[in-house]
Length: 441
Image (cartoon, rainbow, N blue to C red):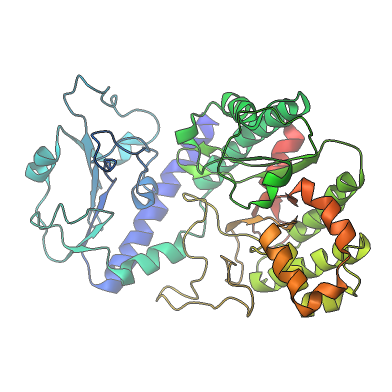
């Protein structure tokens, strides 16, 4: 894969330059200064929160762990990288830049922010600062911070992945799948949520801070909490189900993978298999020209069919959707863009000017409303859950009379199901990076 990065990165950096050239010209700027980001101290403490790199910085180069760097780019010139290498004995400074990317930059080493200010090239005219600065650079002459018109254009085009980016995301999927397989085995071996997390981390080679998002490791009814954030150390005696939603990262590019398992060969296992089959059909429907909102609504039809088939609701599927009952069991969106951020930017943008596309009525949590185009990467993640407050609300409504509450109550102990793959849009058959990674493993 290293060879692939060597071969695909030059075209990637050229694409990034072209996108910045176009966005700067259209918005009247002649320079961009991109800040990698800095540390944030915890309240009333001298320790820092984990550093997260600015994705606009990360799109240029695979440096994800070095705060207080700057890229200075003017169209037609070699981008300048002010690379932070402090003289420090408290923490290990970053090493010499190496690999497939340094030759594409004019690299200048800085030892501190004061040094970066001294070495910062003077702006020739109108400059834009991209990144979170907290006003620290107000007197540096770096220009307008985060102009929205410029960001709209960059966010819109970031949806289209280069070959280099797709290579990174394929590797992130393979790495994530190794973690999923180890986690599934740990579940079968009787491990606690915390022990399952450790198995996942060891298999991926990540620390928890290096994950693209906080892992969801949910046993039994915990799977009904969509972003379950705890890791129970206690061993659960009664083991019914296991849901893992966790991805891995390569050079800042994320995978986002979810699988659900039953502890027994029971009806819940049959429900998982049925949703898995439906999920693959939805993923296989991804193609350029498709309005993603239509696919999201199609997912509700699928959930309604399962609710009727497994006799959770005594209505025809069309009525289950029309009454809104399906939203009780699938309250989130079908998916989202994926890339340098797990919920990547630009999902609502209609065009480069920043106009947006609304979510369908009654579906406020859908994160992607664009018509799909080739080279976009997105998630397909239908779910079917037994969420206490949503079920209580349904029970108290007039639609509660259509629900088979005895059966629903019996399934509360499982929490729910979510199955999630990462899919590349093409003009024909989509590429399912996650299924490919599982097949290879």
